[in-house]
Length: 145
Image (tube, rainbow, N blue to C red; front, top):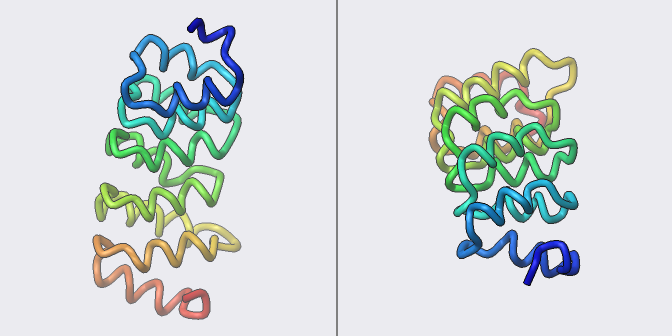
């Protein structure tokens, strides 16, 4: 069936299906934000499409890119300082985020007037966060834990 003739739910289902072709995923990535969010989650989505989706206007789409196991480390590193707390929180929760990325998030949070409580908690719970960073969180943000 032609993508243009599909209902919104059919396009969402197609976008979420790992068997969907790269060409269809590229086309679906230019669709309704709920469809783009499904493309962003799909582990078969090409890396370049994931990178393009990090510039999306809908934070949910960007957050879904951070949850995709195929998202490259460089993309996660760039999103570690995203303006949306939900995106930074998701990067902090991502098991593939390196300790370097987690440190970048912590640096960003400490630079804010009001750090995001959820991001701080997610960082603290991540096993890859170095011990010294955990001590810093306990010292600076102990009331958030």
